Length: 526
Image 1 (tube, helix red, strand yellow):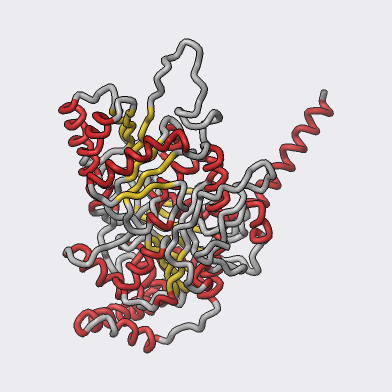
Image 2 (cartoon, helix red, strand yellow):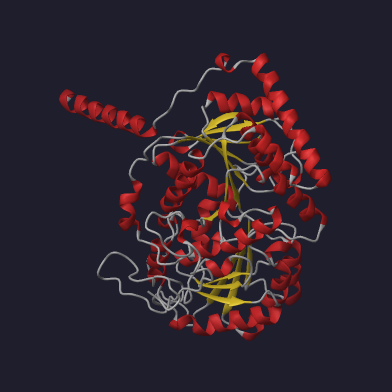
């Protein structure tokens, strides 16, 4: 145990050849909080990096659950759109299906992608034809979505509705309708919000209304949890902290390590270049503005440093103008949008990963970079300090001078930085989507064991949202119940066909037997 009351990182892997790395000290601020917040059967401390068990040690967790659930994810943000929320839902769904549960997802239509689509492991996705506003968020309708949602919930025999992201209108409406139908609800918040601008005020007011009736909430970091408690006026005990994760096998370092670690090829230039990778959406929130000053000053101070920038957005034009102004075409490469499957190929081209975000609830990108063996330099904002232990990351305030100082120090310390494969093994032991799925599963079981709320209790909860907003919320809930009664009369639940359960493991087993039978038949024919 460390002096902060949390387990040390310990060996980097289960093999005897991997020694401990004592410089990877934990830097989390919540070591004294109750272990019940982390939903781990073995207790434990803070989620991010706090002595996570290796995947091999978690094998006892991945037994079939005591009951199989039908789970419905709802969000405006899903594939073919790309982002952290989309990836989180996909990876979590795959692991829940692996554990024997049924998972369907509801999102809005993307172009001609309308109707029902199937993804890996038999995951069913409903692309609903609704009006979409800016940033892939659908237009709020309150009651217009209820008929379709009720049909899907009955057809798929949904036990739990899990909404993702506060900006999603479909998420907010589905949780309201699910509670009206008596279905359990859960909500995951992926972002941090302010309290001063008009957009944040309106979003926080709606969130306070919808979460007043939600069974349980999940946040990806302690900072995000504190932010949600303040925005939605929730009891902290009703929010669990379950971090994001990565599929570490998809983010392996180059076989020879970072470019600065690789042996020099015969006939190649003797001077080694150091590449700083920036990979994010090129928007204001991701800190592109300070980057416009950091890049030319670092290039002037370190002639051996190049920049590789991936991503697209409105801030790409200023980056191109900066490159033109300082004549850095040979040292600053802009590669545009990067598909998720190509992220690892971009990361292994670099030595240092630079994150300049101005606000961030978790930042999965720095975990992916560390898994690929890169040294990480990041702004100290939001939940970022909880993601990686000390020794893997250097922090800076979101200011130009502080970023330049931290990045300069990272460049000088690069020769003494731990090897890429040691970093990968450490990250692999910290983060696992199967671990996340197990914890979320415990949330589902917890909310299913709670008694149902009466209409009067729901009305009292909604009335607490304010003098005027509370009355409006109660009126909407009552109208929602009247609409449900009408839909039950117009289309009884007995008239809706129920979708049979699709077990992907049985399907894979049948395919395997069929392949074996085909091979045996071919062998006999020969």
